[in-house]
Structures are given as structure tokens and as C-alpha cells.
Image 1 (cartoon, rainbow, N blue to C red):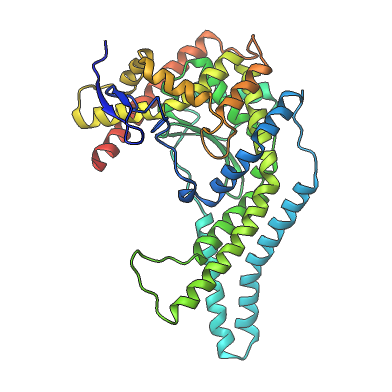
Image 2 (cartoon, rainbow, N blue to C red; image 1 turned 90 degrees about the vertical axis):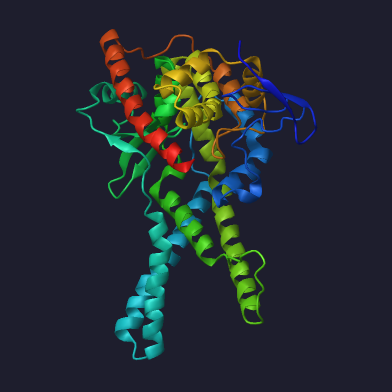
Length: 417
């Protein structure tokens, strides 16, 4: 039996069970039900748009998905407007170096020559944040042949081109992205998340991410994606920063107001681009869920989705092991906790899955709607099942990944304590 104590909810005063290694939350008012929840004021530009649009249109898209046998991405006026807005952003951004070159080489004015340098610096300041770095460590195909074979088999079952690279991360998630000029196709697997999943659930997650590559939605095109990143750079560059307690002078005050006005105009443009592609981005998630259900079976897809909400349990386990060093196998300890989940933690995750206000992140539909969609389009027999030799190979390779991940994870946590 798990030892536990009690505390009182800071919001409503209700008595709460405190079980070491699990989330302490209030069953009466749902305080701390999702430790990763953040207020809208602390969200980034894209997250704010997704948050606001989600409350308005999520149910409408769910109904559309439930009554549609095949999700399509037709050319609509919204998509055409998205490309027009993105084109305007690219034109405005790349006109800066063109104007600067013209002023620098063809103008006799000292002022215009100096302004050319300013425009060059502005262009560099806007573009450098877009040159993002990918998280995680790339895995070589010759060192992890089983994992790459699994990814290739899933891509073949979905009729998608093979994945170019798999990266391991220490995050409790998974992702698909295209990176660099060559648009390298990359799947990132979070070892903490995959350590909690059965093989069929791992296949469901990989199928979901691969589906984003197979069925290209407009939000994952370079043209739209880069325009959104550039506008985010514009916003961060222009938005005035004011320290707490700072007193503005007679000159700085109007400058700050002008910066704020320009930042708001950029936000309106960013918001306009966001709402034109929001519907399609949500359809893409529902389609990826359907593919995961077809490839791995509905039960595996639903259970994998539910386990994605156990991230706080993993991080509490990792912090306790890093602090007290009572176990040498982080992922084995986490799996043991997942096998003996107390009733309060099961209720927390179930309440999350039943709520339309909770989602894995701002780009995904509410978990409740995703589960409804999966169960509506139920698939009892998975389309892909690996053979026994591949299963053994995958078990050995994931064990190696866990050892590698544990070393870096615990070192990072101990350094932060």
C-alpha cells in the first residue's frame, strides 16, 4: 500500500491526498490537475491563437470529423489568403537586404549608406531566430537498424516516403519535422514517453507522426511555417521590454507607445495568418490519429494518447531519483509506478481525458475529442504487427536508448537542483 499524507487545497480548502511520486491535485476544484497548464498571458503567439480558436471551433471540427469518412485538404479561400499573407511577409522581409544593397552601392548619400547598415542588421536580427536548432541526438541507421526498420515499415504501410533521420530526446513527447534547406524528414522520439509505452503503443505514436509527413497540411509547408517564424521574430524584436518599476522619460514614453502599436499590428497580421490555417492544422491531427488507429489498432492508439498525460509522474520520479539516488534504473522505476497507479492519479488523468479544456499542447484538439474520434472510427485489427525477430531487436535498442538517456537526464536534473 502506498504511504501518503494529506494537505489542503490552496484554492478551495478541500483535503487532498499527497502520494509521493504522483501529482497532488484537488478533486473538488481541479486545482493543479494539469501541472503544465499556463495562463494565456504567458503563452507565445501561436499558442494564444490556438487557445482562443480552440474554444470557439473545436466541437464543430469534431462533428465534421465524426461524419467524414475521408479527411481532405481542399483549396479554400482561407488557404489562398494564408499563402497571400505569407507571401507578403516574405516579400517585406527579403526586401530589406535588396533595399540595403541598392542604398549602399548606388546612393551618394551618407545617411542612406548608414541606413543600409541598419537594414542589414535588422534583416539579420529577424532571420537569425528562425535558424533554429533541433533538440535531441541523431541516431545512426547502422547502430539502430531495428528502429529504422520499424519506421520504414510504418511509412510503407501509410504509403509515405521513408524517414531520413530519427532523433532521441529527453522530453516526454514525440514530433515530426522537416529541417534545413534539404527539408530532411525527422522524427523525434522522447525516451521518457516511449519507456511507458508497449510496442503497439509505440507503433501508434510513430504512425501518428509519420502521418503528418504522408498527408501534408499547409501548416507544415516551408512557405507558411517560415512566415510564422519570421513574424514571431518581428514581434519579439519590436515589442517594448520594460523592467518592473522602470520609469519612462518624456522621450522614451512615445517611443515605447510607437513600438507597442507596431507590435500590435504585427500580432494582428500573425493572428490573421494563424486563423486561416487553424482548421487544417486541427484536421491534420485528427487524420494522424485515424492513421495511428488503423496501423496499431484503436485500443493501442487510445491508450498511448492517455499515457501522454503522465509526464508529471515521470518528472517527479526522475527528480526523486536524482535527489536521493535510491534507484539505479530510472525508467524501470517509472514503469513500476505506471503499473501501480493509485486511484487518485487514475482519476486525475481520466478527468483530463474527459475535459475539453485540456489538450497535450496548443496545436492539438482536446484529448477528449481525439479519443471520441478514435473510438468512432474504431479498428479492431491492427494493419501492422512486427515479427518476433524485430520485436527482440527493438527491445534491445530501446534498452540502450534508456541507458543513454538516463545518464544525461539525471545529470541535468542534479545540476539544476
